[in-house]
Length: 187
Image (cartoon, rainbow, N blue to C red; front, side, top):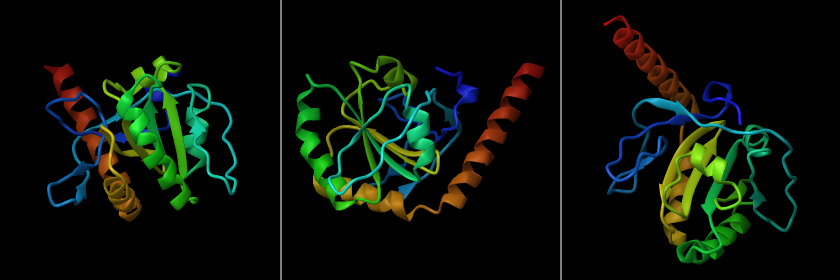
């Protein structure tokens, strides 16, 4: 896989007490989302995407096709899962149902057993984990099987994000991180 600097996916970072995941849109107790803290990039691969059909089927993401699928689509939901995982099996019909209700979005899956390198690149430590990528920016990542209403709410929040503001925030966070790194090197 390419180095972190070579990846086109940008991430919004968040501090989280029980996870070191570098990306997320924070969902507050009121159900409103907000972007937070410094940026990071995740490793990815390159190959081809799939075309949407009337029968919505999740794209199987691999390290070879991840970058192209994410780059070629404005809005991608990614379910990190494994066949032995009970909560993953419970979340699957909810995810599949949402894909049928939102044919304009790309629904993808990463089998964490078959794609351990890709799961490691995103520091996936708990499954299922749902990630949403808009315009090459990971705007949401959260472990746990979401109920249907919560998944719909998260999709709605991600749809309503002002991506110009998100990109501006990502750039500001990059500059702050670079300035902090330069300052620590000088000391």
